[in-house]
Image (tube, rainbow, N blue to C red; front, side):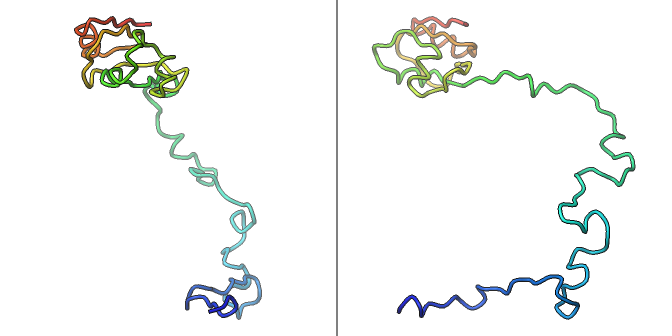
Length: 147
C-alpha cells in the first residue's frame, strides 16, 4: 500500500454545507438563520436571562442572605500521619518546611488534621489544628503552636 492509494472510510468525509446559494440547495434565502433581527446577524446574540426588555426573573426575585465565598480563608490540609514521613533531623515543622517537602504550596495557611499516627516529638506551628491532631502531637511529646 502506498500513500496515494489510501482512502477514507465510507462516511468519514462530508460535503461542506454551502449556505446562501439558492433555494434549490436547501439552505438558501436566510441560510438557516430564521427570520430577520438581532439573532440573524453575525455576532448577534442575546445574553442569558434577557427577556426582551421585560423585567427579568432574576431581578424580580428577592435576594436574601449572605454569601461568604469571596471572603473565605482556605487552608492547606496536612494530616498528622504525613508529619511522620519527614526527615528524622527535623524537629520544628512550619509552613515553610512543609512547602519545601512538597506537602503544601508556599504561602498557604496550614491546618493540621488528626488522621494517622505520630511517633516522635515535633514542634508544629500551623494556622489551625483539629482537636485530635493537637492531642496526638502532645501525646507524642511535641508542641502544637497556633501561629
